[in-house]
Image 1 (tube, one colour):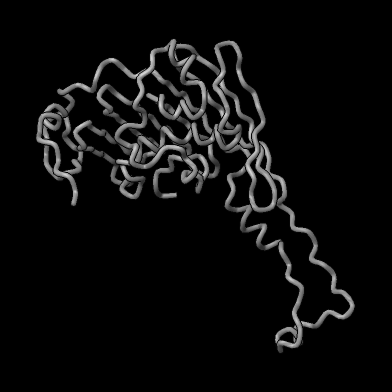
Image 2 (cartoon, rainbow, N blue to C red):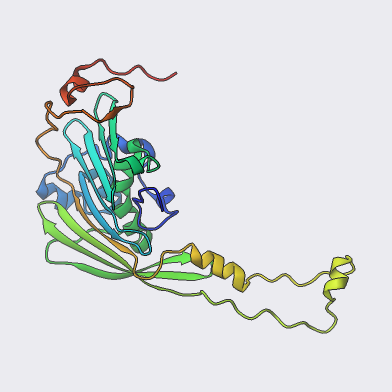
Length: 278
């Protein structure tokens, strides 16, 4: 893959509970560590409490990646993904401006404005997909070690899911694929007495029985799945940092969403809010 891959398994980001326009602010609720244990343990509530995500993946044959997203006071955020020599960063400000910076070979990577929301949604999505929408994060000392399944066209994928409370509103999530079942196609049904030949079927004099599953189709669908051994580790947090990104942060080398040059983050914050698109 030439683009930076920020999901562990392709094709499932559409299931994320966070909308793409949440890139500016994935969470609106700020929680203290104590509140995190009491209020943010439910999966649907977690989507509103997330304040930070650190991810690392192991998805053979793709190169492993590392991603980081953090929300700051005022619903500002920063995110970054590193995959080999590819590197993509983004900053989103409360006034609607966003900035991106990428290595030369990262230009085909994900949209920088989507980067934070995608990183934040990935662990929440997989917990819901494998353990159900009523899943709750564990309390300290009550680690979760469970088996989750995800259906595919001809069987199921099995995953080991481990979740541990680290304290101070932080949790560690480990997801690893352990097996794929249903990859072998059954033998095609033998011809029955009275069934027509291929020549008769082509001539329109009768119909051949429809075969629902073929070895070729199963092989094609199987190739779309993540291989056994794929997985990721995520450290998520629900405590928003008290310190904002500094005004003195240089924007040299960053690309602005409005096409204008700003020397520092403070300059971009103080500039007039961009006009709404018609």
